[in-house]
Length: 401
Image (cartoon, rainbow, N blue to C red):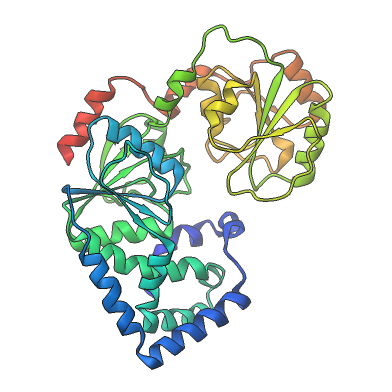
């Protein structure tokens, strides 16, 4: 139980923010998992499943000394870039079938196989379910807890075959489990930063940490003196092809929102903007709320921030790291604080990247009409680093491997 709690450390430390991402549905999920686990434990049928999954895991053959683990589309994009620049590894896609022809040695750990591994540890599942009743974080994340038990068996089996492990997240329960397994197996762990961070992120805990910029170095605590390699925001390699000088004016605003933003205020903003501008709404990928948008508003499919920015002259947001991509492509950024509480988790205002905030729709639209400059482009480097000498910087990583 102590270990399960450890994997959710980031949730405990920031639960007021994290709780909106909970799986929830405890009263529905708990009885189902409990009955299944109890039945499998009493019948000993879980032992047959354990034999099957262990045989499947032992059949995985390594082709490299390094294994990379990918949990999302964003992480896949970062991996593709480092792979194309000479960092080779066996690649494990966790809970996803996303793959590109350029990614070689790819294997898939499906949700079905993770669940089978959880089933094969039914006594542990049963014990954890009982202990989760009095724990609000575990109680509201039972699906993640269940998958963690399955992933623990998978990671233990796979990782012992490798010298190095690369991953692209340092705070999700699955990734903390992965780094902990590396530590227990004496396998060297590498963390490639894949998104901007703030002071709420955990201390550095991988053996080698490849970070975007000075901002990331300043934000991360490093009490164990883990190795840091200053790099650059790798995502911006994908944005280089979208940089166009002298782009034509499109009279288009990109509105980037997230789950912290008030739905009613988003709708009110859109209704005002469409009176004068073309509008594209780009909700955060995790925001599945139904937002009523005017007929003329286009909702982004969310596939590429670069594609959305290429179509836009202005971007409005309150608290979003897409400010960095927008400024990189010379899109004018306006921070509208009325969408939710006036947050500055990334320190954009504090550090001078954003120099002016707007609290009313009237001031916001007036500012856009006047094309006011409310940002300081000179601060961008502090957040994304120097995007140069890619091969030379990649050689530093290869030397560590």
